[in-house]
Image (tube, rainbow, N blue to C red):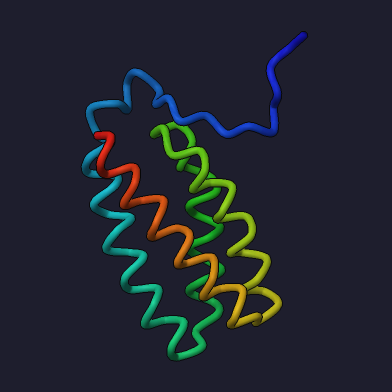
Length: 102
Protein backbone atom coordinates (compact mmCIF):
# COMPACT_ATOMS: atom_id res chain seq x y z
CA UNK A 1 0.00 0.00 0.00
CA UNK A 2 1.04 3.60 -0.54
CA UNK A 3 1.72 6.36 1.95
CA UNK A 4 -1.17 7.87 3.87
CA UNK A 5 -1.18 11.38 2.45
CA UNK A 6 -3.29 12.67 5.34
CA UNK A 7 -0.51 12.08 7.87
CA UNK A 8 1.67 15.19 8.12
CA UNK A 9 5.41 14.77 7.91
CA UNK A 10 7.52 15.56 10.95
CA UNK A 11 10.73 15.05 8.98
CA UNK A 12 12.26 18.28 7.69
CA UNK A 13 13.51 18.83 4.19
CA UNK A 14 17.28 18.19 4.51
CA UNK A 15 18.04 21.73 3.34
CA UNK A 16 15.79 23.20 6.04
CA UNK A 17 16.79 20.95 8.94
CA UNK A 18 19.49 23.39 10.18
CA UNK A 19 16.78 26.04 10.58
CA UNK A 20 14.34 23.99 12.67
CA UNK A 21 15.29 25.59 16.00
CA UNK A 22 14.92 29.09 14.58
CA UNK A 23 11.60 28.12 12.99
CA UNK A 24 10.41 26.82 16.36
CA UNK A 25 11.48 29.96 18.24
CA UNK A 26 9.69 32.15 15.71
CA UNK A 27 6.48 30.12 15.96
CA UNK A 28 6.56 30.21 19.78
CA UNK A 29 6.83 34.00 19.70
CA UNK A 30 4.13 34.21 17.07
CA UNK A 31 1.86 31.92 19.07
CA UNK A 32 2.22 34.16 22.12
CA UNK A 33 1.43 37.21 20.01
CA UNK A 34 -1.62 35.47 18.58
CA UNK A 35 -2.97 35.06 22.10
CA UNK A 36 -3.09 38.87 22.28
CA UNK A 37 -4.69 38.98 18.84
CA UNK A 38 -7.38 36.61 20.04
CA UNK A 39 -7.99 38.73 23.16
CA UNK A 40 -8.57 41.71 20.82
CA UNK A 41 -10.70 39.53 18.54
CA UNK A 42 -8.31 40.26 15.68
CA UNK A 43 -9.52 37.37 13.57
CA UNK A 44 -7.77 38.70 10.48
CA UNK A 45 -4.37 38.28 12.16
CA UNK A 46 -5.30 34.79 13.37
CA UNK A 47 -6.46 33.81 9.90
CA UNK A 48 -3.31 35.23 8.31
CA UNK A 49 -1.10 33.24 10.68
CA UNK A 50 -3.05 30.07 9.99
CA UNK A 51 -2.71 30.64 6.27
CA UNK A 52 1.06 31.18 6.52
CA UNK A 53 1.63 28.23 8.81
CA UNK A 54 -0.29 25.78 6.67
CA UNK A 55 1.92 26.67 3.74
CA UNK A 56 5.40 26.44 5.22
CA UNK A 57 5.31 24.22 8.31
CA UNK A 58 5.68 20.75 6.83
CA UNK A 59 8.94 21.39 4.94
CA UNK A 60 10.51 22.37 8.27
CA UNK A 61 9.29 19.13 9.87
CA UNK A 62 6.29 20.66 11.64
CA UNK A 63 3.56 18.82 9.79
CA UNK A 64 1.10 18.77 12.67
CA UNK A 65 1.38 22.55 12.91
CA UNK A 66 0.34 22.77 9.27
CA UNK A 67 -2.74 20.66 10.00
CA UNK A 68 -3.66 22.74 13.06
CA UNK A 69 -3.16 25.88 10.98
CA UNK A 70 -5.84 24.79 8.51
CA UNK A 71 -8.30 24.55 11.40
CA UNK A 72 -7.13 27.87 12.87
CA UNK A 73 -7.64 29.64 9.58
CA UNK A 74 -11.15 28.20 9.26
CA UNK A 75 -12.12 29.02 12.87
CA UNK A 76 -10.76 32.55 12.44
CA UNK A 77 -12.80 33.15 9.33
CA UNK A 78 -15.86 31.96 11.26
CA UNK A 79 -14.88 34.28 14.15
CA UNK A 80 -15.11 31.34 16.53
CA UNK A 81 -13.19 32.57 19.59
CA UNK A 82 -13.55 29.37 21.57
CA UNK A 83 -12.25 27.19 18.75
CA UNK A 84 -9.39 29.62 18.06
CA UNK A 85 -8.42 29.54 21.76
CA UNK A 86 -8.50 25.75 21.80
CA UNK A 87 -6.39 25.57 18.63
CA UNK A 88 -3.82 28.06 19.93
CA UNK A 89 -3.49 25.96 23.08
CA UNK A 90 -2.98 22.87 20.94
CA UNK A 91 -0.37 24.69 18.86
CA UNK A 92 1.47 25.86 21.96
CA UNK A 93 1.44 22.36 23.45
CA UNK A 94 2.63 20.85 20.18
CA UNK A 95 5.47 23.38 19.88
CA UNK A 96 6.58 22.74 23.47
CA UNK A 97 6.67 19.00 22.81
CA UNK A 98 8.55 19.58 19.56
CA UNK A 99 11.04 21.75 21.44
CA UNK A 100 11.95 18.75 23.63
CA UNK A 101 12.86 16.68 20.57
CA UNK A 102 15.10 19.23 18.84
